[in-house]
Length: 571
Image 1 (spheres, one colour):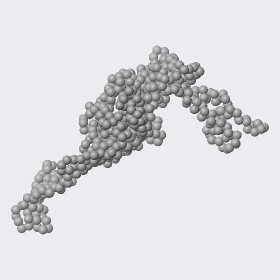
Image 2: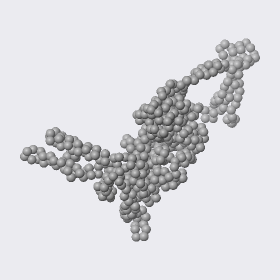
Image 3: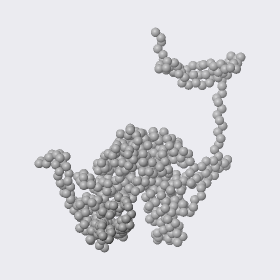
Image 4: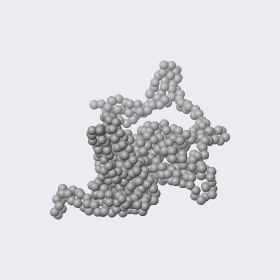
């Protein structure tokens, strides 16, 4: 019976004779592979050689290392890096992330977040090229594979994610209103168990994952997010979001939502869950339309004029509304499946935008007139849209003198009766103008959220597995926090530019002129263009025997004024 092979590594010397007669001696470490049934070489290095005709071994010297050429100069693009570093420091995002996880992981996440901000829409593979000329928080550099490994690790670390959300929530006022918005992210992957067919806002026919983000209306900062399968109703998400915020110490915040969340079933669910909400209503609901009809003639009185928008008039009405629901359980004399009614107090905030009403009325009148002229000229065929206008607003008769076309005044008056009108619905009493301010802030946030979805490469999942997707969403969320902080800082800055503040040094004619030029420039710049503008600033360092010399790309006075006003540099 053969001896059983040892699986331990063995080290020995091997002589290899060369053609010139020299014998090279190698020290090799081998290990038996039972599957392949032979010894595999683990390591091998040259020990020495026996020259031809000799008997003694001569030790070989190690291979001479290549002489390192001293680096005489280096250059980095620092414009964008300085702005991003300032955002992370001033917003507290970097500090919050460092409290939530270890420094290495935090620096890698921040590196990805800053890369996405500086390179809107670009995918992860470009990060390897970008970090060559730009400093990132993770000094050792991060590869494409390293990014995906990081995302997978983040996806399995729920504790770290919730710690970061809690830190962000701690930075918002105690009684804050929450803008709640949902979006869908399309996926090609069959491995994403949360990707399901449902309502997909991209309308690309793919399965999608629903991403739900919560913003603080007072600060404009994202607080937390959650992901759900693409077929889950949004109202369930709001209830879970309320539970999540209660863990963060935000008790009973008001959720401000767009018309997509409006329905009597959704409102009743939120009322029964004791969740305060403010949602855009729909005028086609009969009970809302009747309330609006009762105050339409008095809403445009001077006492109802908006203090901050000269075109808007508004009124608030408290009413009792009967909600219908299907019983889920049998109790007393009511059986499961029976339809019951519940009366709850609802607050309606009714508004009329006079400028928009005039514009919409004039536009409809112009469309009707064009269709009338089209029919009189007997130009055939008319489009489907023109046919609908003709059927509703024109009365057409064939007479002996030809085609008689007159206006349907009653239909026109009915169609324009509520022109420029809109409504907000809530289960909490608010000042009519406070409600409008809250909703308008939410609209601005939603607009930026739609842009940010493309800004941080969020149109596709880009990863194949759920854990990696969770980690990717978290990195996108950190990038979104960066973007929103800079946007808010610039918005606050623009409110102070070219306005006298009583300081003689500030209120000089020349200074106000420079600030006015800066304001005009900022009004024409997006965040994307702003980063591209400052990315040209490069710092070059040259080393000499005596010292080193450093200089930066020149900047114009307006750019320096912008950076100093934000606090990035001192002027």
